[in-house]
Image 1 (cartoon, rainbow, N blue to C red):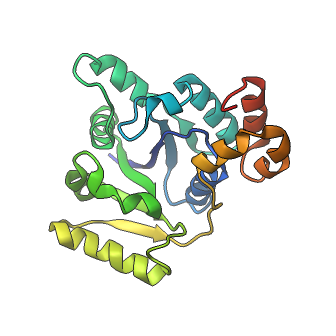
Image 2: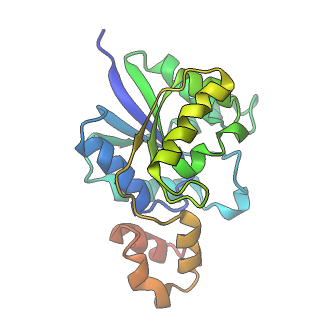
Length: 218
């Protein structure tokens, strides 16, 4: 059975912005995988739930921002997983989600998308050693105060698996990604009239209109 290569892009997406979309477009446009599945976090273990808008709103904005990108699916598997197991778990974790996906979709080979800024903190993730042992990572370069150039980042990644005695398989992409975070977006949204034009540099216009129409973040 020929397996399909699927890149899993997890995150809170609070809200989704062009930095996220740049990563998806790169994988799709360069035929690196057969599909990208975007999985918004249902109950994130790393976030204060009071700072996150509803799951439904985040899904809707992801649908708006990816509707014209081929081979890309907004997948609500995390909600399905949580609803099925909420008597056993109070949070969803990346490794458990990937393992559950692997059991459900036997014809798929799953890879994991992450920014370099996140991989630095992989040691704080639940079952991180198994995660980097069992899944191929697609890592996107991001500006970093500690590692100034791509060679330093490659050395860090090369040592990461060695330090844990694990064969860490990854690709580091140097492509330019919109340098913005969801936190910065939320700060701009606090004064949406003043920052409207600035926000259009970082958000899909349909997403910005959705935020305004539903009065999110302000």
